[in-house]
Image 1: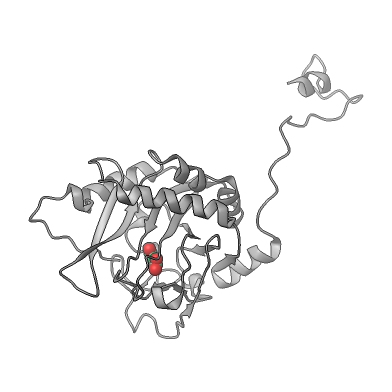
Image 2: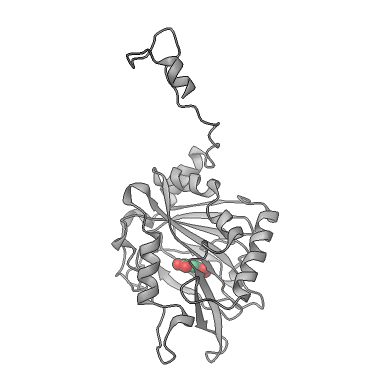
Length: 281
Ligand SMILES: O=C(O)CCC(=O)C(=O)O
């Protein structure tokens, strides 16, 4: 306000004797991604940022995730899902927890960290709006993910484009089912059907590369990047955080998305005991 008052004459026009009006605000944070990293994302559909978060930051988040997973879930709060273990289908193992930032300050701090949203904004070419957050636990015996594009499970009902971000919590290696991605195919749009994994015919010419990541590494990937992962065949959990954003111009959809998902695919602790629901894609 001080700058405006001194730069404007009484008529409201700029006074030539003073520097033109510039909004007074603290120095903006430096943008996290370089032009080369943005170009890499545009070409491949994904970009890996090694050591984006420090090991100390991730250790703190890892503890908060462990505490969240240990707490019995409350109805209407975080959405907790289990899956049949690949080792013994009679055993259910924790698969993922979604919608938790309202009640988890340490996790909220990381999810809303401006370094992530600014980088996401650089890739979206707009301000980033958080669409959803989840933790994939991939416990020992936890299942892999069939080949898919993130937009396939009906996300297009909310916006036409999304950016997903993997924040690595535990070392993610081939043996415990690290992310596997395919470069360049994001430019081809939707390759398959909504709600269905990609078929071998749809994947003709698509080659997956394994992307091992260490705690603190972050992968930004386009919602049309085909990706998959293998089961966790080790004896330790492989926990990773996934965030998805849409462009601010497309609106704010997180609440509606989670409410719709809770109704259509309730977390295990909110299902009637005889209801069997299968994860689709
Ligand atoms: O966590 C993984 O192994 C892959 C996750 C994934 O593709 C997804 O959640 O859509």
